[in-house]
Image (cartoon, rainbow, N blue to C red; front, side):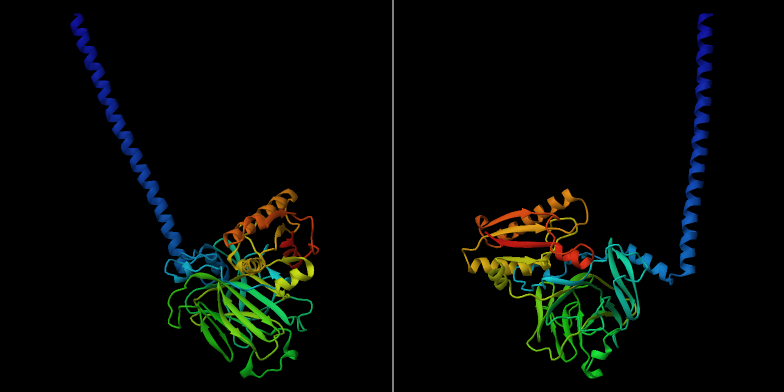
Length: 416
């Protein structure tokens, strides 16, 4: 009897187990089916959205700006060159561009809003807006035929007058895709028609492509080692710099001087910045535009003042990383020290008043140290240099405008 009870019990447990397995299989099957149905619905929704996008098109200005925000240039952004770029092995230790020491116009596009017209500029001709490209604010030339002065002009109180000094520099960063070029008219086409004595055949313009610079009655000159058939240098940022001294003009693309004219042949009075995209698809972006009044040679300034004050050494925002275009100033001071072995400098960093006082103090100290380190790397003995930071405590100018802030963001080389 005990044996029979045991057998019945085992059979009962076996039946329960089998039923449980059957129920479990059924549950799994139902779950799988529900999951597959849910996934299919999501896929169908995405496909519907994609089809709607295609049918609706992508021609509105709002959509165009959204596309700019999402774009990622291949290999090269913010001065980092593509692997195909032979320039990647060049260094900036022979760069000799020294910017003017008094900033008269500066636009780093801080606080600009996408889709709006750039707040520090006026329009001559074209369709131009603010955009975000790879996380940075840029001026986006959507449509801009540069003939007849198309582009933008800086908003200045004295824009109807000749606002360019006898010695001045202009700098900006420009992005290059295939086929497009930038034009810098040395005349404010919006406000200075009465100052223009030229005929159409002698328009005052400079032209910049991905690896060359030229102008009206100025022969095109190419970046070292390249030619007009060059297919490289695409999807990269270039730092363009122009230096004018009474009648002589120099033009730089990144670290290389590509034009050196002893006599420009006319007097620049203002600027108009434009972009020409013959295909209609090539995009033009610019940023970090600065005009500065030229200075006496750095060594002469040192002899008269006992120090060299420069806003031409630039850093990444809120960092102590030196931008490559700063090396013109650093190289010149290194040259002065190599030729005058008795000179010793205290390298002193200063900031504008934006941000926290303590943070600005540390930032100024770190930046001064970075400059000293770079000068030691370039051959100056470390015992001839010290570094200090003063933060925002010693302004040269008020902090009420981008230009005054740019003048306060400076590095001083003080004789020890």
